Amino acid sequence: MRYLALLLLFWLPGCTDTGIGLLRTTQAAFGGGAAPIDSAKLDARYRYLRVQHPAGVSGMILGAVESSPTGAIEVWYASDGELIRLDNGRLTGNTGIQPEWRNVTLPSFPPWSKLAALAVPFRWERVRDVMPGYRYGERDKLVIQVVPPPSSSGLIGIDPKQLVWFEERVEGSTSEPLPPARYAVQGDRVVYGEQCLSRESCLKWQRWPAGA
Image (cartoon, rainbow, N blue to C red; front, top):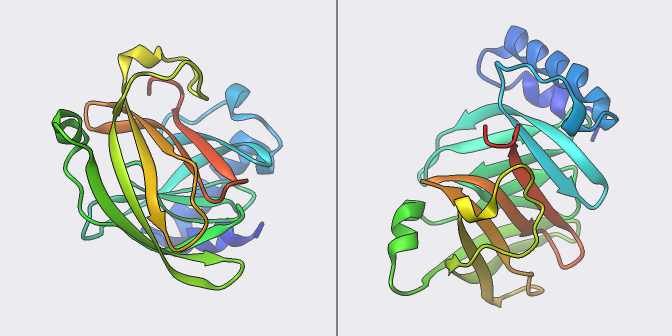
């Protein structure tokens, strides 16, 4: 998986020059995952994520923004090959962190500000393929609603009371039930999220530097 990011870069808009520049920037900042993002010297021309996962903490850089029927999808990657895709804050694919979610299908959602104003929880369905195990077409029925700021989270450098918090629970699934996801939103922008790929493998990510 170490070479996945390099391969991806040559598929990005701008091709070779842009791709090589992003790769060098990521390696310089994070040293292949060895240097913590908290103390890394970051190039202000790029956008970053701080990601906590079972193997530790990774710094990720925004490599592409793709269009989709549900909106813009951000493609974030680390220099050691980890990659995650976010659709307005929700995970819509990952590689390099087990298990891997592939071909994730999400519906169109109201803006976060409209979700926050709803009088009842919002229900929706997700479809995903999961590897390893060749589990195709797994379906999750979910419900999301506003909740009070949590007493503890992985959020750093921002007062949680300054953000609007959502909890997203699985009401039914064709696979193992997953722990609830959480999102911390400022306006219509998710600045922090928690989501589990399985019961044992969970991610916490934050736009970085804090407050950026």
